[in-house]
Image 1 (tube, rainbow over the protein chains, first blue to last red):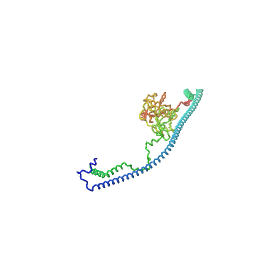
Image 2 (tube, each protein chain N blue to C red):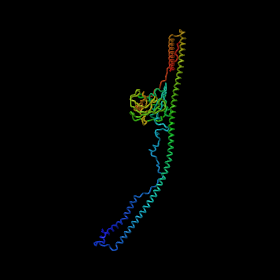
Image 3 (cartoon, chains in turn red, cyan):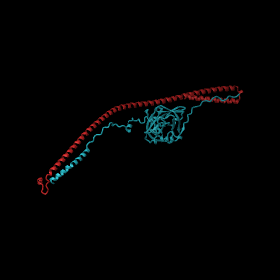
Image 4 (cartoon, one colour):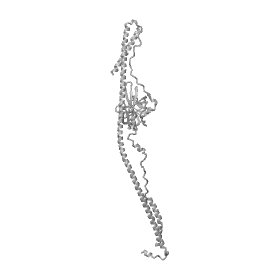
Amino acid sequence: MSSASAWPPPPDRPPPPPGGGAPTRRRDRRTGVVVLAVLLAGALGIGAYLWVTTTRWQTHSAAWEEEARGYADQVASLDAELDATDAELVAAREQLATATARITDLANEKAQLGDENVASQQYLDYQRRVSEAAGVVTTALGDCVDAQSQLITYLEDRGSYDAKDLDRFASDVETLCRQASKANDQLEQELEQ
Amino acid sequence: MTRPGRARVAARGLRRAPVLLLAATLAGCAVLPSLPPAVPDDVVPTRVAPSARASLSPDGAEGLSPDGFDAVQRMAVRIRNVGCDGLSTGSGFAVDEHTLVTNRHVVADSESLEVSTYDGRDLAVSAAGSASLADLALVRTADPLPSHPTLADADPRPGDAVTVVGYPEGGELTITAGEVIGPTTDPLHENLGEVLLTDAPVEPGSSGSAALDEQGRVIGVVYAKTSDGRSLLVPLSTLERLLDDADGFRALPPCAQPSGQPSGRPSATPTR
């Protein structure tokens, strides 16, 4: 064995000083104790820190859970409100569509009534114009008859009147009767339409 | 190596141990979990993002007025032409607060013009003028028009979507859709230059209706219907050219009342 051959120490090395081994061992032991104490203190410190951390995180987690449950309740409540609001919105849209359709219908009815009113007014105006024209034609025909009667009277007493005047009057009567006849024809044509 | 040498090395190691231990402790502290932060009292955001708020608006509600009609419907007007010998109706649309565009033949030979809106309101007309180079007319209203669209940037191309809003047959406000077929020559010779042919259905009374693109912008004015059921538009370019030229419109001549009554009695009697 090599350890047997290494012991006792070779003679060329000086022997350790007398009494020097015991203090070294004591110092080593003290150092070991200090190291162990420091290790123990460190472990205790870390353990305490970890315990505090764990406790805090538990508290933190519980607070978040409580917060989350509160918000979950709010979400559920808001979901219910949203569903109700959606239903109201759908109903409101249907009402709006009905209302706009009704407004469109009413606007159309009003427009059609307006058209009918204008058409009626125009028809009344037409009737009035026709009546007025009929009156004018009647008057003109009457005037024609009167003028022709007057002309006959003048002709019966031809010698009392200037011949040129009589011719002019006869021409005027003819023009008047022609216009009256023409107006009468126009009126008849208008009435036939 | 001799035994005393090893002892010295061990003693040196023991002396270094506290230093190593302290270093290890400090390094270990770095990987220890930190303490939790305080739980906030309120985690609800105080302000809703604009995009999220916009997404809450009901579908299709952006263009709605408070009465539920969209801008396309509000800009359309019904025109009643009360003529001297009859009545006709047509359509039109606003181009600004007091001006509307329609066809010349819609307002021609009128004794008076009556304009009504989508909701049945009657608007007083203050003036009217028609263009000589196109079947277009402008009508000024004393009352403000409910809404007016913007004009498109350019004439539409074949295949573009077109929407026509007006009062076919003088009836209800109606919206029809189709596609632009392309430019063509005016078969009625009412317009200088080319007109547009579309397959959007129109009827008599649709004349003067606005033809709109997909963005609701004006791309033309309906003025006629072909025998095969297609519609003809005065293109936007013609409309813009006439709107830019104040002299392009002339006041409408009043219609003539029918006459032809006989004159009175002979103006004179023969003298004695």
